[in-house]
Image 1 (cartoon, one colour):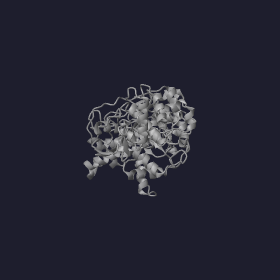
Image 2 (image 1 turned 90 degrees about the vertical axis):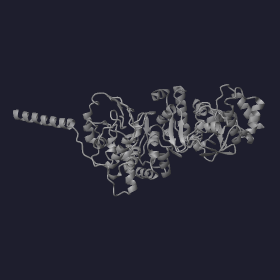
Image 3 (image 1 turned 180 degrees about the vertical axis):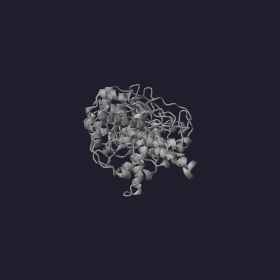
Image 4 (image 1 turned 120 degrees about the vertical axis):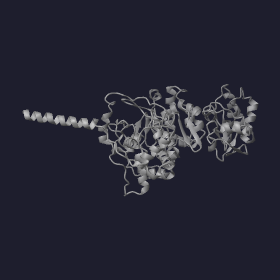
Length: 150
Length: 431
C-alpha cells in the first residue's frame, strides 16, 4: 500500500512501487484530466505538480513521490497562478484539439507561480518541453502574458 | 663442429617437446572438498549473493533474455566471443559439470573438456576467490531452472582461435594463489579488497591493458576505454580519480548509481549497479570504499578535472538557463530546452528525479563527450528502490548535426568544457 496526497486528499493505493504516477492517477485514483502522450517524458502531456514543481508523471515511479503533494489539472485552478492561467486560457481560447492542454496549463501555472512576470525567453525555456501538435504556441505565450498581468 | 650441431639439434628437440607439453598436455583436474555442512538453502543463498557481487549475470545474459542463459557477444579487434549458458541445462549449459570442473574453470580458465578459456571470462580475478565462494556460486547456479540455449560459436581470427595459446597468457598473468588477508590492514579493508579485486573484477574495465590484453597493474584503476565507453579513473587521485569524493558520495554511487554532485552511472556501470552493487550489504559497500581509498593515485587523461563552477551553476533555478545563454539561442540550447530540460533542469540538480542531476559528473566534464554521447544516443536505465528510472535514447529522433550540437551544449553548460563533438563522431557512436 502506498499513501499519496493528491489534490489535498489522501489516497491509499495498492499498486506496484514502480508503477508510473500517471497510471495511478488515471486508472486507480480515477483522475482522467492528465493525459498520456509519449510515455518517455518528451511531450509534456502528462505534466503534474509535485509540491508545485512540474514533473512528467508518465515516467515517475509512484514510490518516489513520497510525502510530496501531487496536484493535477483537476485542482490547479485552486491556486492563484493556476486560476489566472485557466482564466487567460479561456479568454484567449488557446485550446484547439485540447489533448496536450492539461500539460500546458500545468507547466504554465508552475512557471507563473515561481516567476510572476516572465519574459518571452523565460516562457520559451519553461514551455519548450510541452509539445502541441495543433501549433497553439503563440496563443499559449499570449495567454501566459495576459495571466501575468491579471 | 658436427658434435656441436648434434647438441644444437638436441636442444631444439627438447625445447619443442617442452613447448608441446606446455601447450598440449591435458590440464589436471584437482579434487575439491565438498561444500560441507553449509549445503542446502543457506549455501544457495550465499551463492546467489556471491554471484551478484561477482556480477555473473551482466555477461552471461543478453538484454531481455533469460538470466545466465548466455549469448552476449564480445566484439574484439580480432573477432567475436560469446558468453556461454551457465544455467544447469545438461546439453547447452553446465548441468553436467562436477564441482572440481567448475572450480578449475573459475581458477584456471579451463573448460569442461579441458579446453583453455579466453580471459574475457575474468578468471584472472576469480582465481583469487575462495573455494567456498566458488562452490557456493556453483550451488546457486545449479538451483536455477535449466534454460536450453546454445550460445553461438566463437568467431575469431587465426591465431586467436588457437585456444592453447592462452596457456602462455595464463603463465604470465594468472595469479597462482588465492587472496589471503593482509594483516597490516583491518578486516574491513581486506573484505573490500576481496570484493573489489576477486569478485567485483573492477579492474577489468577500469585498469588499462597492456599489449597482450592483460591488466597493467602498475596503473591500477587509472581508467580505460571498453566497448565504446570510458571507465573512468577510480584510483585515489584527487583531480581525475575518486580521491576527492566523500564517503557518502562513494557509497551512494555504488549502492544507488547516483551521488549528489557526482552524477549517475550509465552504460556498463549502470548495469553493474543494477545486477550487482545495489544488492550488496551496506557493510560490504563500506568495505569496498575503505579499500578503494587506499589504491595509489594514478593520473589519467581519460577524464578532465571536474569544473566546480560551470555555467549551470549560474542558472537561477532548475527552470531556466542563465540569461546570457538564453538570449544566444544556439541549436544546442533549443534542443536541450525541448527534449532534455523538463527532466534534467538547468542547474544540474535534476528536476524529474535525483538521478537526472548532471552536476559534477565525469561524463559531462569529458571534452570528448564519449559517455555523454552514448547516453544521449542510446538512453540509460537503472532500477532503484523507487522503481525504474530511465532516459530514452534520442538516436532515432535527431540528425548527427543535432545530436552533436546538444552534446556540445551539455558539455559546455554542465561541465564548462569547450567541446568539439562532430557529426562524424555521432555517426561513429551510433554503431
